[in-house]
Image 1: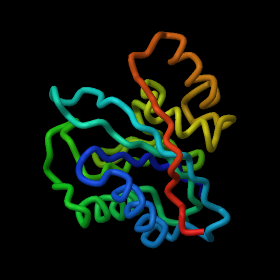
Image 2: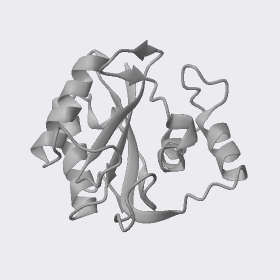
Image 3: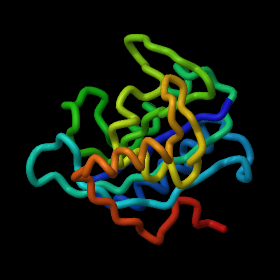
Length: 175
């Protein structure tokens, strides 16, 4: 199943955090071979809903092939976050070394106490849609009637305050 995952970091060496998380996801999520993984550029974004003075985020998106059920994949992502120093109990929108969110998992629509797929705020977040549109612009996420590119265009036309700066670095720089 094709799974979209958002990556974000606003503490420490943000780019190194994204790279480390990307490599960990590749290993722990049984992400398929290297050629089947789609990787966006890295974007610097302003925090949304964070306390004043929170550092800028680096955000990216990847799409992997995974045979893991969505709830098991979420457990693996939480393990990666924990290994990278993110506490399991944390205030919403608090600064973090790494944030990994499942955006979609094939055609799956799921709502449990633990996980909602597709991500419930995907269509309202430029910091998610911008990198996702780079790797999957034509994707229509379950529950949406428009493609990722169309959702992003509408969000931008609504004069989003989100400022995005595309960085040249990419996650998969090891050749």
